[in-house]
Length: 241
Length: 184
Ligand SMILES: [Zn+2]
Image (cartoon, rainbow over all chains, first blue to last red):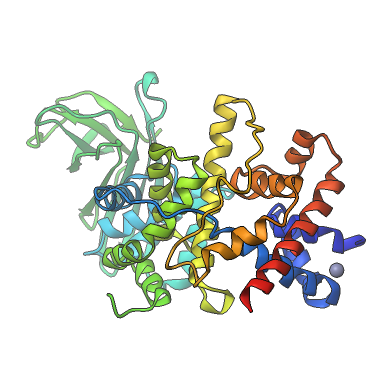
């Protein structure tokens, strides 16, 4: 076994890199020796997977597995980009999925190499809804002890209406009736742009309809004691630059 | 759901129909559980964690199952094995535990049984395995069930990788030959 044929054994053992595997598959189509050997050996290899005893499955396992799968999938924004978009889609079902695209556009902030961006490109190709992203921002925490805290915002135009979308991560947990409130800043004036509560993992999303002629330079987020604030009463936790 | 094929169920899973995932669970949990239990050396806690990861993978997989590329059982167990390997490699790094070089004897651990296992007769594989030399058997065990790479096995056995590769080649061919004889 010389040249590319050498790769047959590592291929069967699943030890080739993705690229090598691709190349070898190509070789497999053309090399008679390898393809014969392969069909022999992979047959035996696949037989090995039945070499175990049946074991009684704990009755409670099904519930645990299903709960784990469904909970993990919707709660895993930072570790699994794919499901992050999915969960965003779910949160916005009443709106068009164009919103998701707009949010995904914001994700470009995170860098072109980010897996989010790949996801975004894929979404772009499958989605035709005309939504225009007018502006985007990224948030920083105001407390240096909250370095994990990040977030993004976008203003999007959908048909005739404008919406502000905010997605925050790693927000500190709230107590009692506390809420996070979003404020639009223009010349020192603050205007309410809605409230939200993060989930257990600290991820929170807000969608807020904007007045047609609204103008603002910055966005801030404060912790408010309840949901009745007309002007900020609590501490600022994040802002856009 | 019970009238759906595996492939149809996987399509529904892509559309996030959790009842389809439950149906897959009902059909294959025995297979997945037994396979994982062996891989985890009988540790019930790790088995549970891996089983959860397997179903999470099924739920989130982008590639999906294509019946043209082989049987569903084979597909699902390949995924299962990959997750087991990831899991035990991580564990191994954590614990740096001593490699258990106990030579698993063919008699002790080679029972096969699962009605879903494509009609395999239990005796067939163990008979085929009993034709392997102990070095061949150990190689298969370390590689397939312990998740060691060919290079790692070469280090364990203190032999060149080339030797390990050709041993694997011979072992698989031997297994295949005896399985074929058994099939007749
Ligand atoms: Zn070849």
